[in-house]
Length: 170
Image (cartoon, rainbow, N blue to C red):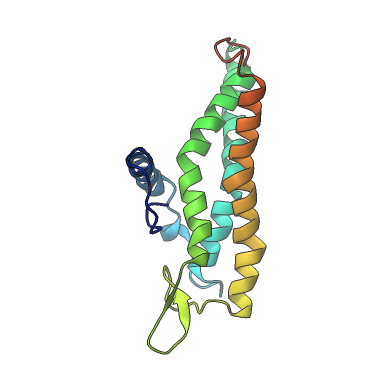
């Protein structure tokens, strides 16, 4: 968002700078590049895109397994709230990377040959059939669900409970 050439107010620019710091830290935590096979015939950028698209589901399953294990071995109450708290923190850390990965498929660069190529992988030509398939089949739906849907849903929940936010039941 800072990279867009807009005249952001000072406070918004500072907010984006802090978010970028958090995003770059969590990018190191959620980096899959070295784990991805190169012999599958599917470019690493697309493999990473799939992994980032399903990352929230994976985090949910891991969190659920951990909190269920803790719940079985102790008398921890508020299991649901602990799971929700864990997911909020994990989504806060992973959200910038998910959105950044999805937007990377829209970031093309025109080269001397007159064609546009992905900024993150200059071997992938933009707006070809393959690129459009990944852009509109994975990146755009993920941006709608994870980039806009989850924050909108959280805003709706918070707005609905705005008078009870100080209580432990929320």
